[in-house]
Image (cartoon, rainbow, N blue to C red; front, top):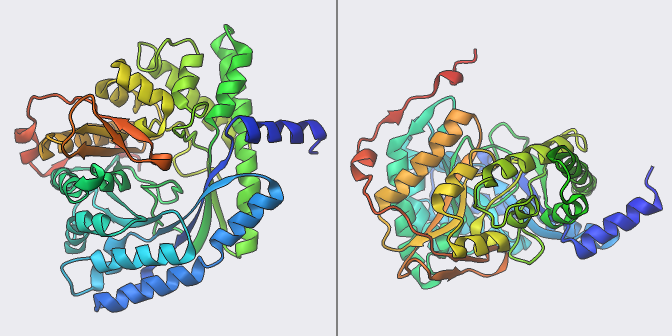
Amino acid sequence: MINQKDILYTQEMINKRHLDIRTITMGISLLDCMDTDVNVCAQKIYDKITLRAKDLVQVGQEIEKEFGIPIVNKRISVTPISLVGAACQTDSYVPLAVAMDNAAKAVGVNFIGGFSALVQKGCTDSDWKLMRSIPEALARTERVCSSVNVGSTKAGINMDAVAEMGRIIKKTAELTAENYGLGCAKLVVFANAVEDNPFMAGAFHGVGEAETVLNVGVSGPGVVYHALQSVKGQPFDTVAETIKRTAFQITRMGQIVGVEASRRLGVPFGIVDLSLAPTPAVGDSVARILEEMGLQVCGTHGTTAALALLNDAVKKGGVMASNHVGGLSGAFIPVSEDEGMIAAAESGVLTLSKLEAMTCVCSVGLDMIAVPGTTSAETVSAIIADEAAIGMVNSKTTAVRIIPAPGLQVGDRVEMGGLLGSAPVMPVHEQSAAAFVARGGRIPAPLQSLKN
């Protein structure tokens, strides 16, 4: 039974603690849009997206007004385009990306994800076409997001794809150099990618999903930070319990909004992703939660342990609030999108190596990190390989969203605005990994993959 105290506390979380529904994301299957003619395929893609998602933004706005809960983003994810475009007799899938972008603009969503390929074990001809279309596609579109899954616990790591993605990221940065490589902010390289992730830039509609589905991503770092202020100096048992209870409240709100949006749109409800997704706003930072546990600066010794506790407690609290928790679910650490992470990186305490260690215990990977524009493609590939190895061995999702900012050096800042924030350019090791990346082939799956 909801009482007045619960209502007032929820209102306080929304008004003062940055609690919001970060996104409602409609997943749409495009498998029936295949055609040998790329232009016909593009038209089918546009028609289906605009038909299925025509009411998405309006319904989101109505729920915002009626429930008094901010829904920051309305988004779409689609079937990986490397599958949809496989029948097309063309060398480029850029027309399909343009159709996605036009459809996203027509229905009014913030982003559309799914210009993607799943190549963890090998690449089809269509996969190569997709990957090599990414730089131009992201340069020519505004709202399209791209992802490539290069590894998994079951398959190992496709090092040919890893090497190619280093080159793709560099080319994407060059083609969007006027915006400091902004195209790279819309490109994620995964290991163990999930099929129901509502968050960009990595969202795509998996082949195991329904024809159309609605997934919800909640957030609320500010709420957790505020809750921990009431347990200063108390044992970690109390800290974990406080986070669990807060995560329950946050997730419950997402469940309510997701079910209602699903009912009004007439599509199945998928999952609630209960990730703590920060923003550049002061008071909405994951880094500040870690510091509230007793760290002077995020990135100092103890940070990985604090993040592990946070991630675990968020998941435990969330699964009690919803029968359908999915996506990534946990704590995000995107440097440019977190005010505390930005400050820690600029102070020199939070380094690329420390971030890599932190990804072992959180829900994602090296996210929204800017490096010097002179960083080689091979170095970018090696960073991807390291992160994919963490995901592969630990049976978890990891990812790399990295921006080799053209013309910028360590100490400069990439300004992207909005939820993307600003990223301080961080140093990378100068020693080469070119010979390592050039080997190609596949890093075998670990022994723990043999579970049958």
